[in-house]
Length: 351
Image 1: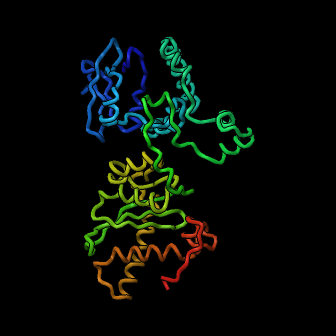
Image 2 (image 1 turned 120 degrees about the horizontal axis):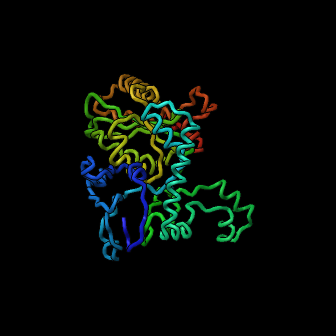
């Protein structure tokens, strides 16, 4: 694209990695739409041709446009790494090709060298490279900016994170948007699994299903829902009330990979992963759902509680199971509640 006669080169794969559909093949060469489609916003940006380059023309936004127009996310805030081995692994799984790693590295190195040589011929690109700032602050910069010893700066870099640092070069914005709201929530040093389960009858409050979140040490969080489309809001509630885990592992269900769920994961910088097709055992939540349902059925039967209160009983059973010191290797004779919060729980109300 062009901005005030300055050329910015954008990799189509960088757009695709953010969930956008890029059709950069001209129509007379067999392309369908020759456009960039933002699926979440249902927006299509048509592309033009200049020699062999696909582009679209934009202008510098006015202050009124910055304050009133909607922001369309085309790329991720994360730095785009041309040498990422993760991209090669994904491509290898998709194509199911048995090519040696040495050959892949050689091809990638040759293509990258040619690409960088061509881009270096552009004066504007050279100017951009000289002005480009690092997305991660080093210990030397920390020493200079915060006026602390180099040893303190080195240990601080190791003991902290910089997930929401912003750059004056990327993304190209006149002002910084506030996107670090998730920093005010607890950060859990664990991986979580999640799945949606359903009830045979609606509850007194009209809930027909629930979202269950589970860790490797059997801490669980249950959120009742009226329908499965509310799964993203359940994830948001988990982050606000319990904290943000390192990774969220689910199956390939639509409500757990797109829409509100994907938006919450992206805004909180939460890594998403899915189980392989036909391998439900890879999701730890499956077994915990089975055990939770059995526990709830025992409680309903012993206390003679109506089935329409199943969601209240699930909340009670969840709190109880989080306070049981079960013989699990990762608990070390503690309760899941103490492992995730650091506080010894009191079971007076359950007695």
